[in-house]
Image (cartoon, rainbow, N blue to C red):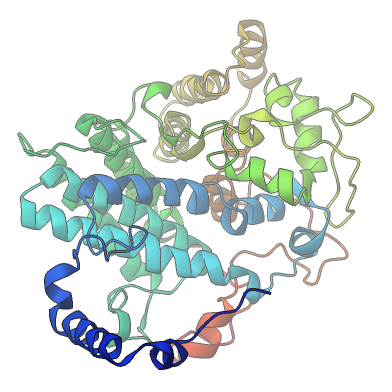
Length: 473
């Protein structure tokens, strides 16, 4: 066994003069350490005291893409409730039975505030100090989207008193109407910043638009359209008129989509791919699969994988059919992107808004067809024969049937995207049958607050049920 000699033992073994020399060495060490230790060596590279705007932006975008635009707690949970997917084990099976555990929501809540929103705040402060309007604008867009994801899932959330660290560990909750005003204000400010004639720093570390200021400007308008139409049950026709105005300034092709592209490496792959690799707890929902099959939809082959018998099959809510089809490469390949907002979604917003505000139904149908065509293009499944057939099928639709078709096609096109859940809550389409054996008689329409808030923040709303509706709903 190797023996270790302590400092006291070593000191006793030294002859007298050597003890004196050692004593002097120790004195020099303590008195002169600041002079001979290089301060740059004594720094933890994994915890830098400061980072560049480029590094902050790259990290924020990956965080948003992985946790808010494609993560288990938000996207998979909402997709299971919406019967696009079905949970077959653990938390996902609980979701199929309308059991949402507040313990499972702690990390997404904490990451949204302590990482994404805090990093966005730091980026904006840096941009203001350095005189970089474009980075300030991008920061505001990411902040607006993050707030949108949080408030659409939970309703009232902390905002105005949040992000203060130890100065305020129990921030007050803002009502959703106020949060929505903040979202639109942030996007307006982003548009102003991104409209500046120049920026000495540019937008670096940008994995979404590769520094393209005009694409970010379009994305701000696109998000404004989304959050305007969310208020259709509150603001009526004005919500649709506002949305239509923003659509005109937003995307014009699928190439404009606000998305994050993942890589094929195990550490850089898509979050649903990683979930299926490590947890494997969801299968395709039977309602969604049967809808695609009934329409002979060309997207079926990319939205789902064949089961072991070579068929496309789904699992009923709470059925836990582990033999059903798994999510397909469009959302679950290692390098599948996650979408923040798309050209396809904007066309569906446009079709809905045109229908409600009194456009000719033939005009609405043209935009609906454009939306479905854009979705096929987005997922690489363009089929002109199918589109021609679909065009004939919708020609006779009118009134409520046409509106239902717009929302149903949006439900199909926004597979594993947050807007599918939000649009269903807002309009009731498509009509879903709740799990008869679920913990509630209704499909949940909101998340419960995470246990961390229930325990540590005395301002958290109490008495909230998962079947309560958020303010805009």
